[in-house]
Length: 501
Image (tube, rainbow, N blue to C red; front, side, top):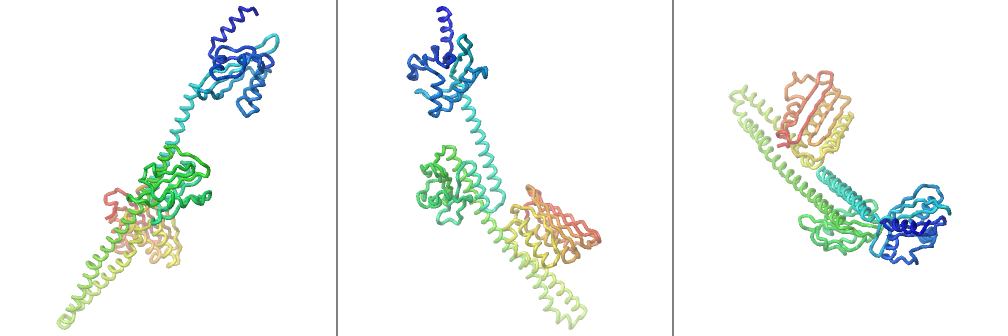
């Protein structure tokens, strides 16, 4: 090749933006372009003559021996191209420079000459593209994480409104917190005067026995919720105060067995979870106040009914009894009628009194889910009658107090009829809840009856219908002689009167 051609080829190579080196069949650098030399000058490359005459493959091998994984991959790729095992080799890699990290893509292609097969190695700067890709990937991960956090917080809100016991709600929050924050464990440590119990996942901070004491020592006087000054600088723990009605009641502790510094988003998430914990505790306190109010209101109602029904009935019976001696002397026939009136009045008073006695357990009925009360009722009546009762009871949330009581009384009346009067051998009770609707079904294989021939006061039909009307529930009773009885009740929240009165 003449000198003019050589200059032309060098000019062409120098015009390219990639950093190019030409290797001979032994892997020795025989030529480089202007971009290669410029990069070497800018980044303090110590090779004399920009590496001309240096064994490039040996240099890469030495770098690989020092622990550079990219150098080893590139050396093997160039060797494969040089040996003709593959047409080209491409590889992306990072490169540290005084100005900061850069990214390159390297291409190795064969050059066939009379003295053997050489390789053209070209390194193209792809930093701008790579940074854009990494930014896009980071944005995708952030979006996915925020979506996961939003879904978890939505799930926590659903649990808050589920009617579950407070401990189960708090454990759910701790479990979600541990997953979202990739923590070793998350614990709720109550303040010394709190009624709460310490809660955490099964590991119970075993990796650090001192962790449970943190809230009473280093973090015993936290700032307002959400104030970052309340968070310690420790890279292993993050503590957020849980406040109820403005008073500190517990600490939410996020613990890492290995040191880790949480970012601002994670700190904000811990604060949000502490607020959810506060809301759960406040909801429980409100529920207890509502129950206490309902119980007190029910006691007042029982006193009124005792005065208005039993007392008045007995007063009327007493008036008749006072006049009977005089009437008996003058009109014996009328006195007999008076005795019958006293008998009817005392019977009515006894019925009213028994009803009031039954209502004394209403505070229990409004304090626990309906499925728990009916489970206990079915077990009690089944043992008393010696007849098994199959139960299919779903898990219910707490319903309005009048709804819980009236549905319970309907179930009680239907079970009593089946066990004591119907001579049934197979009895089943089914209770379920879907959203704001509740279904109650009691079926037996007893003697049955014809509803059209029975007055409303028999078989408890009137009682069940009255209680269904009290809560705007739909009641259906299907029965026939010898065919058993089916009692079905459906109550829907939001239906006119459906909240109970």
